[in-house]
Amino acid sequence: MPNCPKCPAQTVTDPPSVVYEDYYHPQVVNVIHQVEVVRRHHCVPIPRHCYTYSYKDVMCDVSSTRSKRR
Image 1 (cartoon, helix red, strand yellow):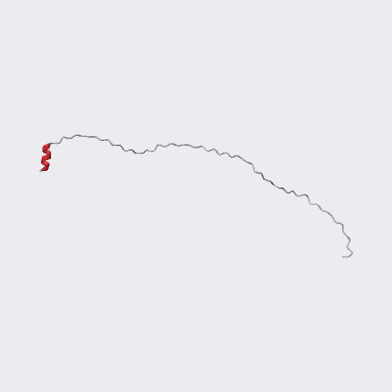
Image 2 (cartoon, one colour; image 1 turned 180 degrees about the horizontal axis):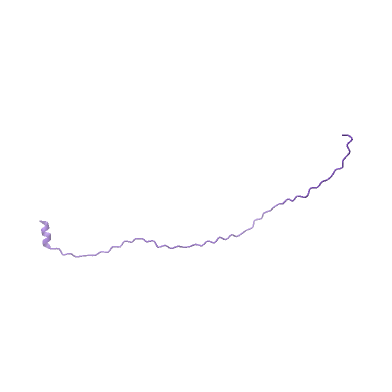
Protein backbone atom coordinates (compact mmCIF):
# COMPACT_ATOMS: atom_id res chain seq x y z
CA MET A 1 0.00 0.00 0.00
CA PRO A 2 1.99 2.83 -1.24
CA ASN A 3 -0.59 5.45 -0.42
CA CYS A 4 -0.89 4.41 3.26
CA PRO A 5 -0.53 7.29 5.66
CA LYS A 6 2.08 7.03 8.37
CA CYS A 7 0.37 6.35 11.66
CA PRO A 8 2.05 7.83 14.69
CA ALA A 9 3.38 5.37 17.22
CA GLN A 10 1.50 4.95 20.45
CA THR A 11 2.78 3.87 23.84
CA VAL A 12 0.66 1.72 26.06
CA THR A 13 1.79 1.11 29.66
CA ASP A 14 0.68 -1.94 31.61
CA PRO A 15 0.07 -1.56 35.34
CA PRO A 16 3.22 -2.42 37.28
CA SER A 17 3.63 -5.99 38.40
CA VAL A 18 5.11 -6.77 41.80
CA VAL A 19 7.88 -9.33 42.06
CA TYR A 20 8.88 -10.52 45.52
CA GLU A 21 12.34 -11.81 46.37
CA ASP A 22 12.20 -13.78 49.61
CA TYR A 23 15.32 -14.15 51.69
CA TYR A 24 15.37 -16.61 54.59
CA HIS A 25 17.71 -16.33 57.54
CA PRO A 26 18.23 -19.02 60.19
CA GLN A 27 16.76 -18.27 63.58
CA VAL A 28 17.51 -20.45 66.58
CA VAL A 29 14.36 -21.56 68.37
CA ASN A 30 14.83 -23.51 71.59
CA VAL A 31 12.36 -26.35 71.86
CA ILE A 32 12.30 -27.75 75.39
CA HIS A 33 11.18 -31.36 75.82
CA GLN A 34 10.40 -32.24 79.40
CA VAL A 35 11.11 -35.83 80.32
CA GLU A 36 10.02 -37.32 83.63
CA VAL A 37 11.95 -40.40 84.68
CA VAL A 38 10.05 -42.71 87.01
CA ARG A 39 12.25 -45.22 88.77
CA ARG A 40 10.07 -48.16 89.70
CA HIS A 41 11.26 -50.69 92.26
CA HIS A 42 9.81 -54.20 92.23
CA CYS A 43 10.22 -57.02 94.71
CA VAL A 44 11.00 -60.24 92.92
CA PRO A 45 10.68 -63.46 94.93
CA ILE A 46 13.77 -65.62 94.70
CA PRO A 47 13.36 -69.01 96.37
CA ARG A 48 16.04 -69.86 98.88
CA HIS A 49 15.68 -73.46 100.05
CA CYS A 50 16.24 -74.01 103.73
CA TYR A 51 16.21 -77.39 105.39
CA THR A 52 15.50 -78.31 108.96
CA TYR A 53 16.64 -81.52 110.48
CA SER A 54 15.22 -83.43 113.36
CA TYR A 55 16.95 -86.29 115.04
CA LYS A 56 15.32 -89.17 116.78
CA ASP A 57 17.02 -91.93 118.73
CA VAL A 58 15.38 -95.32 118.53
CA MET A 59 16.45 -98.18 120.75
CA CYS A 60 16.50 -101.49 119.02
CA ASP A 61 16.07 -104.76 120.85
CA VAL A 62 18.94 -107.12 120.33
CA SER A 63 16.65 -110.12 120.15
CA SER A 64 14.65 -108.63 117.29
CA THR A 65 17.75 -108.22 115.16
CA ARG A 66 18.79 -111.84 115.82
CA SER A 67 15.51 -113.30 114.76
CA LYS A 68 15.67 -111.50 111.45
CA ARG A 69 19.04 -113.04 110.69
CA ARG A 70 17.84 -116.57 110.94
